[in-house]
Image (cartoon, rainbow, N blue to C red):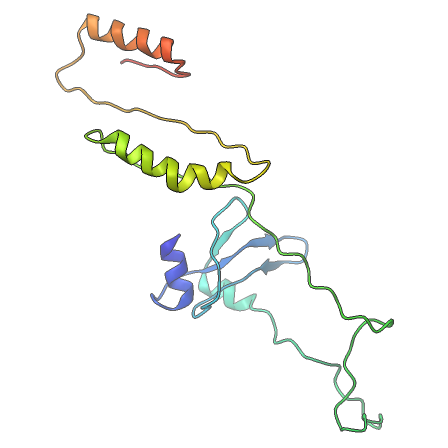
Length: 175
């Protein structure tokens, strides 16, 4: 994610653009960010897309006009500025609601030398941030992957499997 952010803000030259999502019906990229998009917020989720630069440039939105083009022979307002476009009732257009991300997923490697300290930091800085949001559902999964070149004896395998069962492990494989 940091690489994508750095590339689209212009800190690095990146071989891609970024968009919050692709609308296949209109063939547009929503939230399109190409090089030097300094205010672009990068959120990698199931909707976000990484786009080749030539394709991103081809989908770059046209500059927005602030009002309708002047019509030949049409009277201008007293100050010479054409009247602003808006709804017929005179109320301003409401901006589209911001699409907020709804999912967080993270994977981190934890040192086997000091796992308690690192797990404690993760709980304080990440898990607590998520569990304090009303309605959030947070699931934690600890995955252990061990390679023992000398092999595991029968007693160790039995102990590991019994402990896994006691602790409620979903998956436990010794091979």
